[in-house]
Image 1 (cartoon, rainbow, N blue to C red):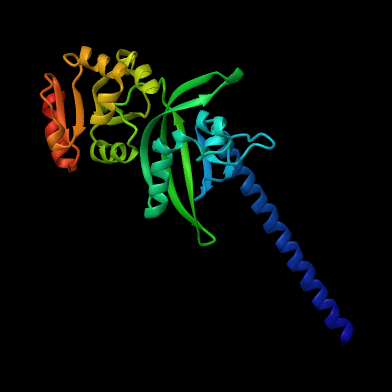
Image 2: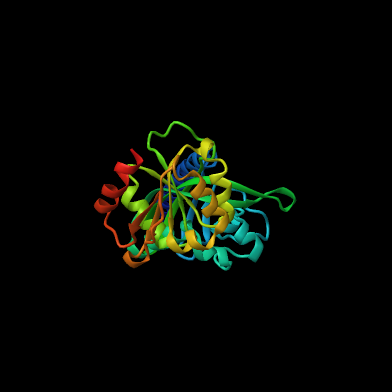
Length: 272
C-alpha cells in the first residue's frame, strides 16, 4: 500500500514538474518574442524608476556606464558631469522636468518635444530634436515609467505648425506646451546655443513663431538681435509681468500668468 501511495506521489510530482517545465518554456518563448519586438524598434524605449535608473531598454549599455537615462542616451550634460541629474544644465532639462512631474502626478505625458545635445564621437556634440512619450506604471507597488524617445530632427509631415520656445524656465515651457500642444508643436531650446542653432535654420524648421521669457530676451543679446531682425517675418512673443512690458515695436508681450484659453486668444490672430 505504501509503495502504491509513493508511486502516486512520485507520478504527481513528475507531472507537476513537467507542467511547470512547459509553462516555463512558453514564458521564455513569450519573453524572447517580446524582447525581439522591443529590440527591433526604430525608437528608443526605456523602463525607468523614479531615480531615472534604467531597468530595461533596447539601447546597448556599455560596461561600467551609469544606468541613468541621460547617460544611456549620451546626453552631453550627463557625459560632462558623469551622472544624469548632477549637471547645471540638468536643472533646465525639459525632459527631466516633465518626467519628474509625471512621477509626482502618477500620470502619463505625450509628445514632449525638446532639443538635446548628445556627446558624439571624438567628444563632438550633436544637436537633435526628440519627441518623448511617457507611460506611468506600478511594478511591485513601486512607481516606474516606460519612456519612448524618437529622433524627429529630420521628420516632416506633421500637420501642426511649429513654435520655437526659447527659455531656461522649464516650468513655463511645460505650461505653454500643455496649453498649446493640441494646436501647435512647441519645440524647446533651453540655452543660447540651442536657440541660435535653430533660429539660424528657421527656414528649415518652418517655425511659425518664437516665444521666450522677458529675462532671456533681455539678457541674451545674440538671440535678441536675430529676433529683432526677423520680427516682421516671424511673430515674437515675450512672456512678462504686466509691469515689465516696455514699448517694443513688433514684439508681442504676453502676461506670464495665463490660462490656455487666454494664450490661444492672444497668439492665434497674430500667427494667422
